[in-house]
Length: 126
Image (tube, rainbow, N blue to C red; front, side):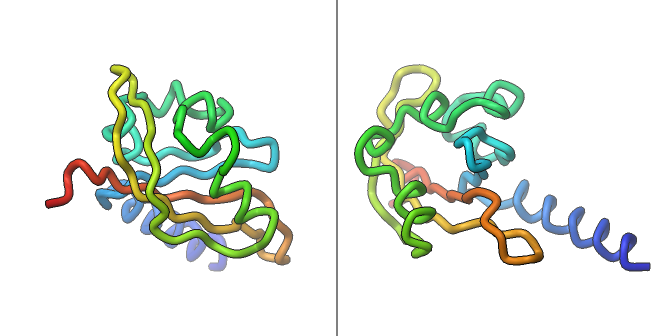
């Protein structure tokens, strides 16, 4: 029964992540992308199959990746980042203004297993 409930919740969570307009991705402790939703594909122009398993800085080429990585700060301090402005360079080389929010990912025992980041394409906001 518990497995069925977990599977059902996982399917619902996946459906939600695929339906929202914000890009969402997760990384493991080595900074490799472990999930990448449909909006992340649309905003970056990078297909999920190309993003998965790659370091996030290789995929996003964001203004903050080198010195001020919001996700790195969150994992170091345990404090989330909310609506931090930044830029990414999409697959066509265009500079896209985004807003970034981050969180620590923990397993059921409370151990840090990576990080999650959501980002919104600010060029689409009126």
